[in-house]
Length: 334
Image (cartoon, rainbow, N blue to C red; front, side):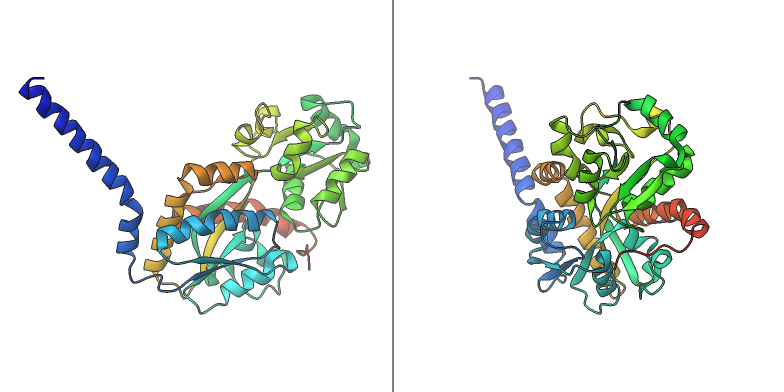
């Protein structure tokens, strides 16, 4: 081997070592920069019980976040009032080590749905970053002979003779369907059930003809060919259900609605703490194992900084506000 070749090989080995060292030090470097916060374990409040989608997301993120921040992240379940108890706890907290994984409605239109909510999302909560989102799936009863575009045309012709199911007034699934009805000119009647599993049972039995449902619940039945899925309400549906189109592609132009969770902190948090947690969240959401786990659960990884989440909140308020102001007062479940 010539001297020049040997030098080139040595240079390549050095560059590989430097690259490996940089990758290995990525997480510790972030910790070193964040030495003054957090100083003790973080409490991540979730407004739904163990085994729920929100709980799955929180526990998927907790350990990776702890590894980046250098402090444990403890998930605390505080179910009740459709997640409002947890949202209120976070909004009213004076602890800069407590935060929440909050449903989109808790960060956007909660005061319209529940005037006695006890907090103002815009005033009392600080957006940190989007954790996960998913399109809702427009599902049809297998009792119906039509599919696809033909079924969507039939819905309009059926008027109020057709019914859709949801897990209750004021839930994301109810509001999304009411938005869809407005966009499509449908007159479908609403039937409320205790939860989405009961909505699925009603679809399978033909008691309701339509429902907007979360992918995590629908995926097994769709794969078995038991529950028809017409389309998804937002980009990304193809990732979760290959071959299923967006509703926009079926002629419902411009209709987009995604269901999401985000990290939010009380107002007492310093801008430095919010920024550092946001950076840690983005770092974690780029990890392939986290992305794969969220997709298995029926979710797409979130991302973006606090400013991007603030824009997302404002956009959904603008989308839902006219609907809520036109309708008789709706209330979130209690």
